Image: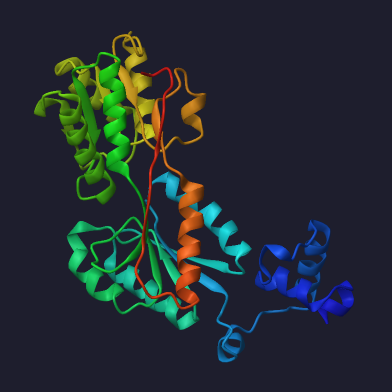
Amino acid sequence: DIAAQAKVSRTTISRVLFGTGGPNVRVSEKTRAKILRLAGQLHYRPNVAARILTGKGSGIIGVLIDSQAPAIYFDCLRHLERSAFELGYRVMIAQQHENIDNLFAQALDFRSYGVDGIISFAHNYPRHDREIQEFMQVIPRVVYISKPALATATAVQIDIEAGIVELVRHLQSRGRRRIGIFLADLQQKSLQLRHSGYLQGLAAAGLPLQEELIMFHPDFLFATAENARLIFARLYVQQGADVIICQNDLFAAFVIKEALQHGCRIPDDLAVTGFDDLDFAAACTPGITTIRQPVRQMALEAVRLLHAMIQGETSPRLVNLRPELIIRSST
C-alpha cells in the first residue's frame, strides 16, 4: 500500500523502513520523508516476528550503554547508528549504571525482542567481573567496546596506555619533570589503563615515580568547579606539579579556569591536559592538549564485527585502535 501511494518500488520502501539494500540503494530525503509520512498515516508497524520466522533476522542491533559513560561513548553512538543503517540494521538502545541485575535483564530483553546481536559499552565493572563473565557467555553475538575480562570475546578497544605514554613523552620533551595526574576511581577499567599508561610513560621518559603527584578521589565522579579547586590546590599549590594530566577534557577545562583565576600562567607555570578531544577542547582559551579517540572508526569496526558474526563468523576477534595526541596551547 505504501509503495503504491508513494509511487516507488518495494525495494525503496524496504530501504527506508528496514534499512535493507546497503549503500547501493539510495533514497532522496524528499522520497524518504514521503514514505515515512505515509507509513504513519497508514499506522504501519513492521512485523519483526514474521521476519525472524522467515529466517531474515530482525534487522535490529541492541546496544547496552552505561548512563554515566564517558561523553565520547555517546558521540560514538551517533556514528554507530549511521554505520548500522548502512548495513541494513536499526538500533535499539538500553541504558543502566553499574546495576548488574538491570544489565542482565536488558540483555535478556534484547533476546526476547529478537535482536540479531548486541554491542556493549556497559560491561567493564571490575567488582562484577565474575558475574559478567558467566552471564555474557550465554548471550550469542556480542561485540564489546573495550575488551572485557573474557578469554574469548570479540571487541574493539582503544590503546589508552599507548596514548598516555605518548602524552608523557611530549610533556617531557617540553621540559616538564613533575608530571601530576588526577584520576577519579580506579574501579573503572579506562582509568586503570590511564594510570598504567602514566607509569609506563614515566619509565620510558626516564622520570622517577613521585607518588605525591598522583591524585585519586573516587567521589569526584563529575567535573565541577569545586572538584577542580581541590585538584589544583593539591597537585599544583601543595605538591608543585608542573603538569596536571586530567582524566578527561571537562576536568581539564575546569582546572585551567581555576588556575587562571589564581594568576597561574598556562602553560608557562602549569601545563594541563585532557582526554577524548571533545568539541569544546579546541574552543577553550588556551586550547586543551588532549588525546583524541577515533570514535567513528570504533563504531564502524564494531558494526562490521557484529555483522560478520550475524553472517556466521565464530572466531573471536580483537581490533585495537590507536588514539591520536592533539597538541594545543595548554602545554
